[in-house]
Length: 287
Image 1: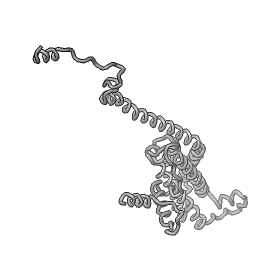
Image 2: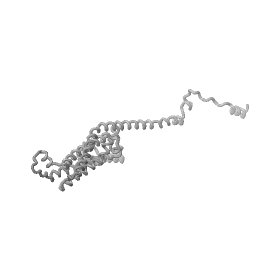
Image 3: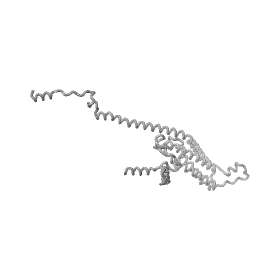
């Protein structure tokens, strides 16, 4: 057979058999990179969704527990505040009846009674939404508890100041001829307007204390300010008495400024502030 015939026979011969299935050197046994990536892609997509669902479930559970704890711990101060608001409303009715009967306070003390009456109505209008709807109400969700607490505290200071001014300025009325009973003496010393002034101060103090207790419980459970992490997820900061007159962020800023001013350079045991940490990080990166 010549050379061309041998080449034709080799060309028409069948191809070699494929490797055995159990051969580790075969591509099918080793697996191609494309098939591995296609198999792991759904797993990678499923992992973040599972983590997201777990975090969402944890957040919902912590939020539900925070609401339950706030409702339980705030039930007593809420009832105290409702009683105080009912007392302030009753005092307003008593003042109206006294005015209708012609019993008007004197000119020297008229301004004091006007201030305390205005403070009572302001507290009624501003504190009524919180103490009627509770810790799940719209007042908490839109962040009005802090301004309401500040207003109630300010009106309480106005009431106490009006009472102190009245005790300095006012003088008892003269007794009627022949009146010697204790009731006559008591009526000469304190009338309906004076009774309303003293009672207003007491109700305002109760309302202020109740508002502070409800506000503090909301802050400790992480339900206020709106958008905060509930207890069990984030770090709950301490509640400062400065929050009676300012918001939580402002109180924290004032506290941080006081800590920064009180820090001594020689005090090596003092905790580094956030500014010091940032400066150290910038120095490390630059080196």
